[in-house]
Amino acid sequence: MGEGELKLLGMWASPYVIRVRIVLNQKGLKYEYFEEDLTNKSELLLKCNPIHKKVPVLIHNDRPICESSVILQYIDEAWSESGPSVLPTDPYEHAMARFWAVYIDDKMRSTLLGILGATTEEAKAVKITEAMSMLELLEEAFKKCSKGKPFFGGDTIGFLDVTLGSSLTWFKTIENLSEQKLLDETKFPELVEWAERFLSADCAKEVMPEVQKIEEYITVLKARSAAAAVASSK
Amino acid sequence: MVPNSEVRLFGMWASPAVWRVEWALKMKGIEFEYIEEDVSDKSSSLLMYNPINKQVPVLVHNGKPIVESLVILEYIDETWNDKPILPVDSYERAKARFWATFVDVKCREAARKSFFGEGEERENGIENLEIQLKALDEELEGKKFFAGNSIGYTDLVVGWMAFWLGVAEEAGDFKAVNSSKFPFFTAWIENFLQDPLIKNNLPPRDKTVEFFRLFRQAGSCAKANVK
Image (cartoon, rainbow over all chains, first blue to last red; front, side, top):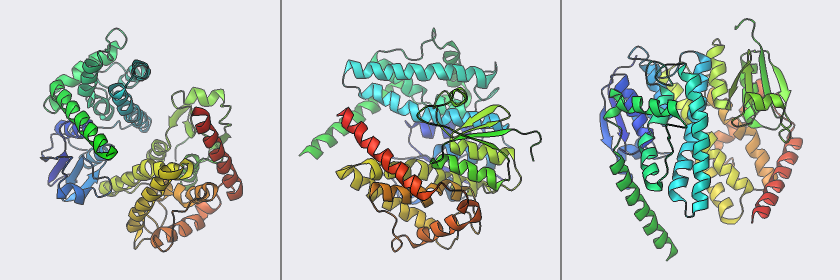
């Protein structure tokens, strides 16, 4: 079923793109990667994702698939014979994985960006408390989903592993910049060990960005938004 | 058929997310017990089954809870896998899921701004809704339903826009749906609401409009209190 030409439009720092690349690697799928400049989007991106104009976009035999969670499910279904399953095959475990993925995507981005963008210590403290509550829930979720195995997905990296794992570099970067340990091994021992296993996995290693590069990128983003604020106030 | 199956649905009569689960259950002919929740005074059962979001809908199948309406729909389709709701082809499934995220994230946000917002925020909401309706209208060209000749997953997930968007327009005093700008979408609304599955499975319109009117007033009061 799953044969033919694969292209991926992406951006190196985006966790949504990273998670798709990890799964493509895990499935042993070859693809042509196109790095997008999000300040100057390509014709191909605008044609393939006219509604959102966002990455990632997977193009399979010239047909585009958009939205990272939709792409991951597509890869799982179209290449069900290649490599391990991305999503659990049991419908209930599948539902659990998708629920936690929704939770992570809802909370993670706003909490991490909230810590980064907080202008007062009080505001930062509120966001840090939010992050800690989220990690507590995820520590419990890990125990339930993994059932003693190395990953949320069991023996191999799965949907929930990549959903959470793709943000690990951002996590580390924000810990450094805010001088606040979030993934604390005394509070979240299972998650910390899981993170180490995830980051050393072959399929993840080469696509996870470096902390320093993300720090530089954050500086660029802050400068850009400051410039935009100045421009719009004139 | 799933033998010895106990299915319970925790819901709230006005909630579109709850109704889409009911539509799916009825489409599949699955028997279930419905429990109406008072969302201002949530039951201990609801809080036990959904401690994280504390929201409806919650589907409980043989004692195991599933939350988030889109997750519930896929669970239902996988567990009772005769009469599939989602398309069979992987690419068509990807398109259906794409539209689900589109209406549940983008359109809902625009509708929220149009309904609760004032001034520039409201205008921005309505403008975005119109762009989104155009995209949905184009998708429907040449089709009776999103899924083709009969209702499918995409119709069920966009379904809130067939009824609740009109309710929000009336209760919130704004207009986005326009039959000359969006002829296919307007025709789809008619077809969807007339379908026997949907026609007999909607909350009473007047009561829903009134509920949303009060909901909007409460929203404005809350904003005023925050200032």
